[in-house]
Length: 366
Image 1 (cartoon, rainbow, N blue to C red):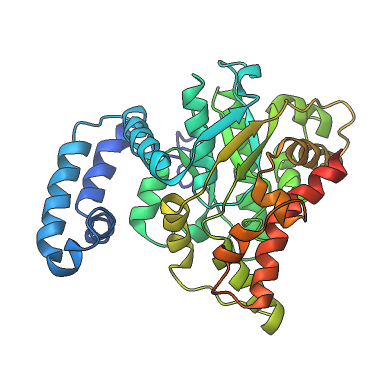
Image 2 (tube, one colour):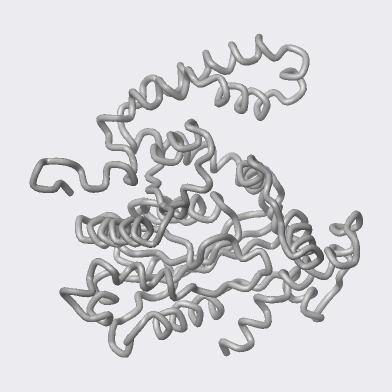
């Protein structure tokens, strides 16, 4: 969308356009940090001893792979193929439900539970692609964009920026209003959106929608339509993503235990980036992505009512694996003892509680 001066109102938060793709790919291929990261991932042992040589090899391979790409769709096909291979190595299979009931030519606002920084939206888009639907634009906090190459990769992959680091009440309000407008503009122009139900991952396993997120949705509508009318307009679909095993479960437990013990937790500068890497490369067992039903505006009189409706669908459709049931006292915990062997008792308790919480929420949902 442009203002009266022809300026793109969303330029600093939107994903890249097709005509920007080649310049961004050139920038990535010539980014030493990005090349070094790919080199360590592809050739972990050789990179220790032959670092400069392996970086040259990786750079050449990337040029060959990326140079023919002219638009976002072609880039996403590359990502899809790599992601499919990764899922084959790191899961015991991905299943899904509910997506076939959605219209393939209709945009939706997917409000998803949030367990993994980048894997959650990647899975939703992967399933959408398998089902013949368009992929969604992805909301990602600017706190995660510590490196220029990360920003480039995310925006190439249809991510838009949520400005959580805005300082001051006025600046934050302005940023949230632009974000609300962007989400509505995307839906009205035929583009689906993925956004997490809350800021930050549910490290304790408790999937709860933050009403503040839903207030943000309404900001750009409050002068022209009711809250219920906004709900109908945005086509909100809750999504529940279930992992049999969370690759970051021990890291989350250590953070929660430190917070409980010391009252604060100081996150390292690249901690989120490392967690993103572990989420993609760590073993997840079985994975299920459950798409809910579009929420109707009738009876939705405010953020709390809508949050309760989203939570009810997520808790009801969350697929409970043996890891969840056993943590809740309904099965063999030998997997848990093996998985948490190096943790202290407090940390073990947080891991167990996180796996058990979806069972508790499902029981309440009925």
